[in-house]
Every structure is written in structure tokens, then in C-alpha cells.
Image (tube, rainbow, N blue to C red; front, side, top):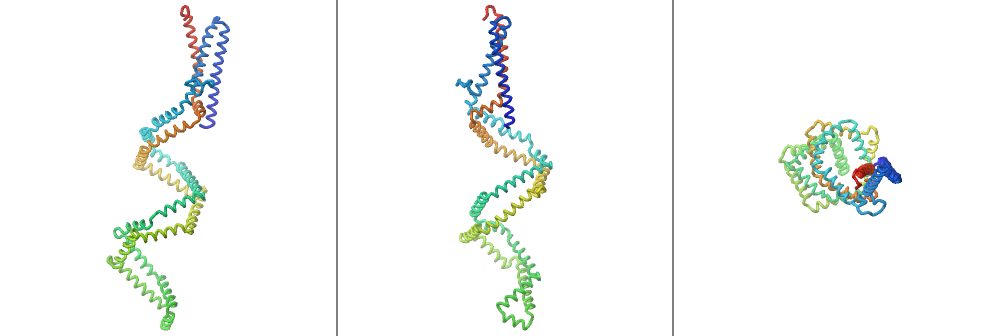
Length: 431
């Protein structure tokens, strides 16, 4: 309850208490005055009215006060009913909310009536709402970035990720992945692609020139006398280019032979090598230990940590800068995605039905646990309130109406007093 609403209710309650109290004082004063007249004339009627009204007002005052506290502070039995029965009130209130508002059938019926998929589709198709979703998601992302940027959080997350990565058996996973990739000889298709690309690369004149240069350099270092002797007969660069061309031609011919012959020995050797490698990854403990040791070395290397931190800082800075712009690309993408989802949802009845069905399944699956947890929360919350807090909250909610009971009791009591006085006069000899 907001403070302004609480103040307004407290003011209304105080005003009604003053009114009921003033009426009690008025009928009491009227009773005294009437009694001082010794029942002369109409004063007997006024005295009867005032006496009964006073009794009714006092009785209702006692009843109303007894709900919340001990009247006049006296420990009269069966008073202060609400604080004395706080635990029972808490349990009954929790049970009422659980059974009447959160029953599974009730929730499912409300879900059908609400048609969440239809409403969501219509809501998202409004441009302002798509922008609102984008703004909320962008704000959440910015908050998440600030949270992650905390040094303590970053350290904790990094440690958690490292621990998870340390537990991963890279060797066995790699073996399983490669095993999957070799099904139906798919690794041979990869070999064919590699052979074709290597052949095209070797056909490049620039590559051949590079080969020739390398041959001249190697020959100059390893066989300087031979190179000089060749230079006496022909141009060494031209000789190197011819050798490079011959080497490339020979290699390309060999590559084409492998590519054109499915039963080429080199293909069978490739199969055997891949199979052996996969088997070692999956079953060779020493090989797996070396791979995992290398993994641990990489994970603990400071250069890797520095590199990853740098990537994160760059991504974070870019996201922050983009989100601060009025024409943020990320925010626009989020808005477009929300609008596109709304359009798709509106145009696809099957998707809407599927979404509603999944929501219903989720409600059915979670309703019992949710309703029990909420009822326990309500009961525990009410039980934890101080008696004076509980009394104040209930009294602010219904106390104003209870003061009308006091007013009605005063008036009705006075009326009954008049009836009884009249009956007394009608009965011969009195009662």
C-alpha cells in the first residue's frame, strides 16, 4: 500500500472513529438530561431511546475493539481476536488464495480466456511496443554488462569457465567428432577439396616464382659451388623456374592421380591414418594425457587470459557506446526482431496454437509447486508480522466500515429502546 493511500485511509478511519465517539457522547448526554427530568412527559421516551442507544453503542464499540485489541487494555477472554489468531488467519488466507485463485483448473481456464499468443502478437505489432521491448532488453543488457564488468564477478566467472574447461576431455570429444565426420567417407570429400585447392594454388605463377626463388636461395646456401657451375652454363633464375615448374607439374600430376582414383594407395593410407588418429584420441591414455596437458597449459597461460580480456573489453566498450546512441543499431535490431516476431505470430495460427499449448503445459507442470510455494510464502509473511502491524493493516482496510457498525448500533439500539418503552406502556401494570 502506498504511503498516500495509507494516509488517506488512516484519515478516513480517524474521522469515522470521531463521528462514532461523538454520537456515543451525544446519546449519553441525552440520557443524563432525560433522567434529570424524572420521566416527565416525552422525556420518558427520550430517556428510553438514549439509554438503549448508549447500550448499543457501547456494545458495538466493545465488539469492534475486541477484534483488534483488548478493550481498555483489560485481558478479557476472547478479545484481541485477530492478533490472538494470527497463525490461523495466516494459514486460512494462504489456503484461500491457493485454492480459489491458483488452482490448476482455474489458471488453465484463465489462460484460455486470455489467449496469450493472440494478445502478444497484437501487442508486438504496435511499433511503440516493439521499441519498448528493445529499450527494456537494451537496459537489461547494459545492466548485465555493468554486472559482469565488476572485477570480482569477472574473476569468479573466469575461474568457473576455466574449471569447466579443465574437466572437458578434449581428446575423447575430438575423437567422437572426427568419428562422426568420417561416416560415409565424408573425410574423403574433405581430402578432395583440399587436393583441388592445393592444385589451384600450385598453378599460380606467383607461387611458382616463389618456389624458384626458394630453390635459388637454398642452392646458394647448401650447394654454392654447384650453383656457380650451373651459372656458367645457363641463367640460374631461369634454371630455377624450370625446376620449380617441373616440381609443380609433378606434384599436380600426383594430386590429380589421387583425386581421380578412389582406390589410390594414398587414399587408403589417408583412411588408415585418420582411423589410427581417431582411435588414439579415443583410447590411447598417454596420447589423451598429452593433449589434455597441452589444454591446461593453454588455459593457464597469461597471454590467453590477456587476449580474452582484451576481446571482452572491446566488445563491452562497443556495446556500451552503441547502447548510448539514440540511433543504436543493437536497439534497432532488437526492435525489428520483436516486430518481426509479432508479425509472424499474428500471421501463423499454428505458431500461436503451439505457443498457447506450451504455456498451458508449463502452467500444468508448475502450478502445483508454484501455488504451494506461494501459499507458504503468504502464511510465513503474515506469521512474521508484528501483532501491531497486522492490526494496523487490517484496521486500515476494514476499520472505516466497522465504525458504521457502531453508528448503526447506536441508532438501532435507540430504536429498540423506543419499541420496548412503548410495549411497557401498552402492557397493563408494566412488565
